[in-house]
Length: 398
Image (tube, rainbow, N blue to C red; front, side, top):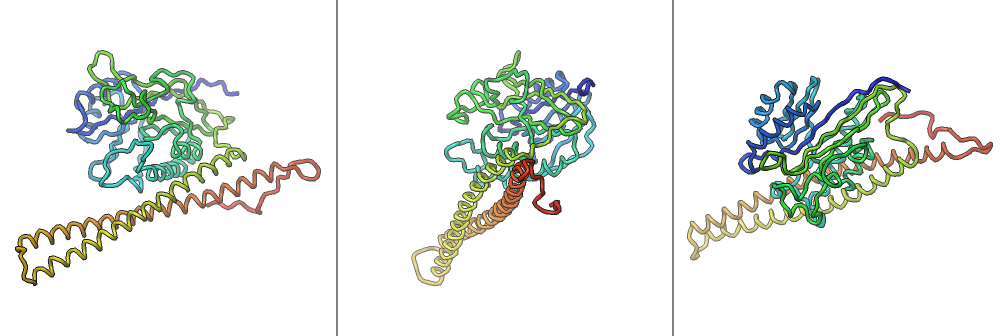
């Protein structure tokens, strides 16, 4: 057994709710967040919804001594909102953009459990996130994933992510927890929380996480996890509408550590069940998106036919003035353009959903092969010993 003293890694995560001119008291709250980070001396701070680069630069100046290494992920028109502050040198950074990010005519996150318009999109994002983790962490000693996932602990996307990456939830793994009831990170006692966002969970919901995974070289354990609890002592308001998380992780180098995902039949069977569930959701989302594309096509053709009406009336004697004909033509052109843009949007979404479904089918087939192999290796041969004969003379790497 290893006897070396474990190293510790303190990780902080917070959705800052930093939408300038919309979120309340941004300037004052960023001042409070900077003071908190400078005081607590976390090794790594993972911040979300830092939408203004000006706010990032403010925190960078304020934390130049405690967290000299930073990175702000720039993306698109308004940015990604993601920022990292670290006591340790950041050697590399990579930004991955999800293929599906909601609809342009629905700009607010959907928290409705009964009518979740974005369920399929979050499933696809979970699938892309687990693929990103798997393909970028093969040689890593440890993996830490933190942030606002917009998913409850037992939501399908969350189960998919954890079952296929081996990431463990610090809240369920920790020895010591100090925070809101049931680890909630959106709570009714928070001054900024909209009570309608919590329905039907009046006490709160848990959608912010710190997930971790070790390796054969490094064992990993969550010694403690804490959250803020709404009001901040000696301050008139909280840090954000979300609660912050702080995890203290112990790291111990050991060649004997075994923390990779289990490949036994039970684990593979669980992965197959989750993939079957998400494939059903993606297929349903595909049908819905195809129906939306058909509606966009009908809108486009309807607008095109309507556009012929003012054109025809322009050459016929009628009581309509040219200004009225121009107005009708402008409306028809607007509808035609809107229909065309929506058609292109839904077509792009359909391609993403079909590609995701194809990838899931490959994974499902691979898991079925692994499950069959596990069962064959566990079945006894005629002499009573396990039959370890492989299914094929070689193992192909995809």
